[in-house]
Length: 328
Image (tube, rainbow, N blue to C red):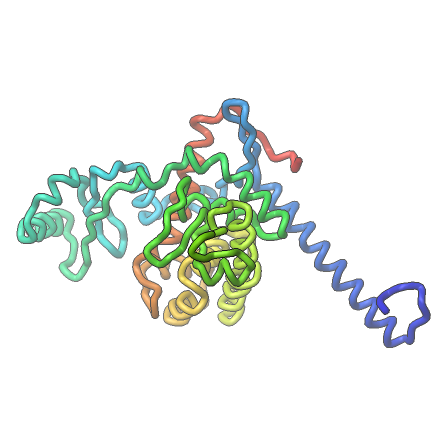
């Protein structure tokens, strides 16, 4: 009958007390989390519009911005598509920036000669693969996605999910546009059809509710809470790696699960197989492949760092007023 004024046996009373304690613990935990998330938020005013965003202090305090991979992707996000960067695939060391038209006009043998000359100039071993990456400034339009961040943060908070993920996903998945990926993902949170349907969205020939921001945000929050975050916890717990769920390293691991799937991330974590800090684990994942965890998967957390870095720059260079979040 529940914990009412009715007479119950001692055993029933023990169950009721345990239930109340459990509910109280969960409520307290969410309250503590909410306060922690609030401390990470700032209110930003630009052109009389108020937006809530998550600050990026951890990037600088933990020196993620000093790593070459995020530095590389920051450059790519700022580079127009008519330019490209020759870089070392494993380390993302930049060897040259050239006009894409000049590169595309070269024959295969000329391209090989260009790479050979760069290898000799920088002392790059022949076993290291070289990539040519075009600028993606036309895709990462942060000024356009910026107004949606506050809405995404609120929806995640309303469903007791870390709002940092809303901001991170909105910045890198499909910023300010609703394009369908090659794999079939669609919407602001790039949800696969099966995932969207699992959480009640309509996806058929005549209607695709993944285009609805609020509904898509709800599904992304549920996917993170029910699948991605628990999977990341399990991987770290199995290896005895200490973590805090509000730390950037843990969040980046969860982002990898969101993008590549729990099984693929578990495969690469198992292949690495060492007990280190989460930050060291993430950096090792950047140069390790397993199952279907390949180059695109390796890049994902690097993109997340670079995007948060650029958001920080955007806020402090263009916004009129910045203050701690009031929680309203």
